[in-house]
Image (tube, rainbow, N blue to C red; front, side, top):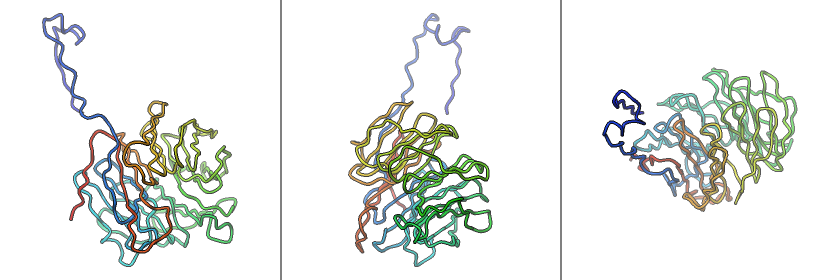
Length: 348
C-alpha cells in the first residue's frame, strides 16, 4: 500500500485551503470491481478454485467420466500453467477439491478415493483407504489434513460417512460416533479443535476438541459446502438453503436464490459470496446482499468459490452435472470478481 506524507502550515489536511493551496484531487480508484470470465470452454470441468494469494491460484477438476486426464491449472499472477501432464499417467479421476497451507503444500482429492499432494514441483499419489469419491479436503497444518466423501444416495450399502485424516505420514480413517450412510461433501475449520463437515440430508458434524457431535439446523436438502469468516460466523449451503451459525446455532439466511446454491466463501466478516447452478452468484456486502446473477459467467453451473486474502472472489464450474458423454467437453470455467482482472492466457 502506498503511503504519502505532507505538511500543511503545521496543521492537518482539513485546513490546507487556509494556507492558500487548493485541496488535492481525490486519488484515482481505478476500475470498479466487477465479475469477469477468466477461463472458459475448457475440456474439463473445473470444480474448485483455491489459492494462497491472487498470484498463487489453483483450479482443479476433470472429465467427469467423458474421458481425458485429471485437471490441474496454476496461476502465477501472469499466466496459467496446465500441470496435468505432471500428474501420474493413466489417471482420469476428476478432482473435486483442493486446499493446503502454502503453494508448496497443496492437497487434491477426487473420484475413486484419489488423494494427490503437490509440493510446488512434484505430484505424489497417496493411499486413502477408500474407493468412495472424496469431495472435500481442508488442511490445518502440514501434519493435520482432513478429507471427506462418500457415495451419494448409496446409503449404508455403499462407502459412506467417509472421513480420513493425514498426520504428516499417512492417511487413515477417522470414524464418527454414528454411521448414518450419508455422503459428505465438504470439510472446513478454524483450527485443529474446531472442524465442520456437511453432507447429505442436511448433515452437519462439528468437532470440538476431539469430540464429534451432530448439529441441528433448518436445512431441507443436502448441504454441499461449509466455510466461514471466523468461529462465530460460519456458512453452510446447498439446494435452496443458505445457513449461518454464530458458533452455537444454525439459522436460515434470508437471500433470494434464482437457482440452487453449491458454493460459499468468506472474504472478511460480513462479506460473503455464494455461487450455484445456472450462473448463480450473490455477494453479501456489509450484511446486504447483491444479486450478480446477470453478470458473467452466466449460463453455466458454478460449483466452488474462493475468497482471496486480498478480498477478491473466484468461482469455478462447467458442465459437471450432466451424465457422461465420452469425448464431450465439460466447458470448464473460472470467474473472478474484483478490480484487477487476472490474465486468461495459458502458457504453451
